[in-house]
Image (cartoon, rainbow, N blue to C red; front, side, top):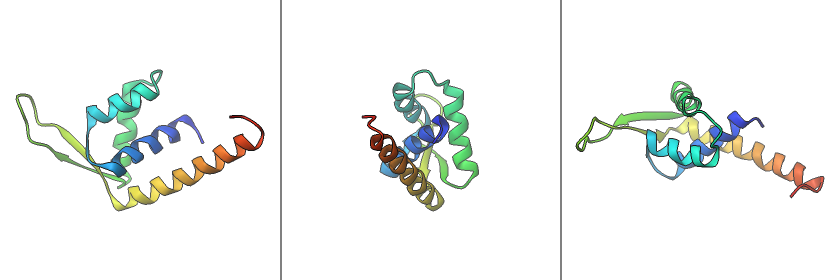
Length: 100
């Protein structure tokens, strides 16, 4: 499992909880992966949308411009489960050789 897939798993995990404003998700992910460029995270979000795993909609504007929100689509739930299974297998394998 590559770092890209780990970040994708984290994005899908967040989306499985609720709808998120793009920048809000970016902040959460960037705090966990501070060495990752923000453009990479946005590219992954666009990829999830392009693959049909996520959908976007415009939220109500407050004082500023309208915000783009992301929500998980059915294919995204399947992708989330797939990546979660990969993560569990990887974690078990690493623990099996004594890395904690």
